[in-house]
Image (cartoon, rainbow over all chains, first blue to last red; front, side):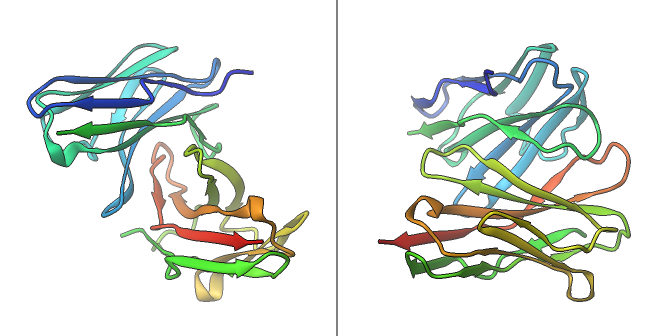
Length: 114
Length: 116
């Protein structure tokens, strides 16, 4: 069975450029999460969706970040314009339904903004 | 506020030793859930266990065991007879039981190195 699929695995870009990270959750999962991992701040929840609807985006750092989930099988996290401090590993995770189900994580996207 | 503290930043032991990873949490809620995740060198986080606040039974799964003590707000993880493949970063996490509040608050992680 395919797990959570993220693309790209690595992204190197220059400051000011737009970056789009992609995620395909596990089929049948109703909840999708975007996390960011840095050495300084650890794992932080950026935003999560239930049934394609954003529920809590209080973790999104600022207006440069936006996330969409146009359908149950696809989500994007966009940073525009990107800054060096956005460099991190971005994880997408999904879970079967609302509640206390465990999260299944993708392999992450390593983003480097030069 | 919800908080998870993993005081051990790094642990290094020799293979076959037992090792315990500490996790202390803070929450005012009476209903909550605790998790452990493993992050191997490949990068993805792998679920290990979930515990709810009403179930204080300790759990054993092979060489892994977990000790949940509400009195000390701790949820410690022990690996018995460690193996090199156990080398990873381990995260403890807390989720509130409030309906719709699906935020997992992670600790800073403990990097475990098992030396042959």
